[in-house]
Image (cartoon, rainbow, N blue to C red; front, side, top):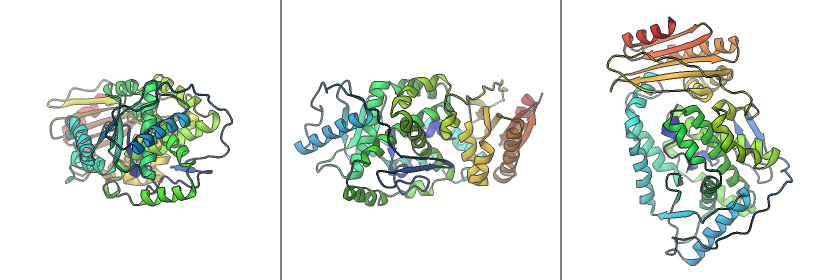
Length: 438
């Protein structure tokens, strides 16, 4: 759903998604942490006994932080070394840490959102057509407020910089955990080069694959953060939870459910996926996935159900989108299992979304925009005919419930393939339907 929008700061730590204030993620005692991801629980038990021997560090100082007190510099270096030990990797070169004021961090976040401004009008119109966003809500303003509230620092894959607020008096427990999370991004990109693959997915509108890859990236960093928390004393853990519970998540809590779910997905489901694999072979499968997942192709289905990874690959569906007078074809991509889930969850409830999307086998979607009006075509197949029928029934209920009476929507199965068409203008919807119904 908001895959492109949620990827504006793909490697930013959104605190609301990683603290006990989030209903779908629970973190308990350090020796037995359980993360529950909508029916996909993974529980840490005995850790693998294999260990990784790291080469000795080749550098001793972090450049660019001379303005900080010596004790804060030392703390930053310790956090870097701790991240390397947890993650079993070494930085080739010292990470580039950019220290900014809180206002400068907010300005950087705002600028990154504004840089994506050309995508907002089309997506805003689409989400309103689908009944996911109220008519009086401005999508860009909503996300600007949301990221401004939640981002505590981020790794910039374009520049290789780790951007964090300047600390004159050292870091709190939550801030140290945040640094471990972001340093993990910097370290894995340094060693495993995820940014190039991830950027290519976005540039090529392989958005469901990008969501799966983002879940790998964020799940990896969240797992490293979790392992760091397991090293803390009970007193430090108490401080962590007290501080985390005090974080203001007003903007996140008030956002539409599909936006909340989309933003939390890479942390919640990503952590569950990484946990499942970490318990098998520590970081081996996770490390390999950075190179393997772009070629599978990956899908959110494989993240939602870790046992599906490398096995239940999506079927590629193709279509020729019709030319619609006055409309531009915004993108062609894959909606994905998670896309159907969050769409149905918001309107029909979580149980319906999980059940209807669970048998997802593959899909294709096209999105159009004329500067004011939106149009959408989704073609989807289930793993079985029954799965396709379950999705059809849910999407029909969705259409009747969510799409406004003045708009046009159609749900039907043609030759075993579900077609969902929605448009602000009836004649446009009819033209799209005619192109797929034969």
